[in-house]
Length: 121
Image (spheres, helix red, strand yellow):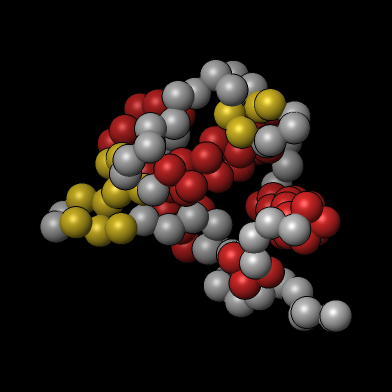
C-alpha cells in the first residue's frame, strides 16, 4: 500500500530515485503491468523517454504513477476522476507558487502540454 505525505502529495513509503528508471523497475516497484502503464501514457498522464528498445521514466513521472495508483487502488477513483484530480492538483500548486512568489505560471502545464491558466493580472 502506497502512503502519501498529505502536505506534498508525495509517496512516503516508496523511495523515488533522482534518476530515470526503466519500465521494468516501475512494474516491479509498483506491482503494475505494462498494459496499465501504457494506458497512463496513452491518456497523457505520464511520459517516458525511449532509449533503444527500453522505456525510461523521469522521477516526476514516477511520482505521478505512484499517486495515480494510490487513487485507483486505495480510493477506487476511475480514470476520469484521476484526470480531474491531477488538473486540480496542478492548479493548486500553481496558486500556491503564485501566492509565495515562486515559480512561473508557464512552469505548470496540464497533461496535454497546454497552460491551464490565463495570466489575469
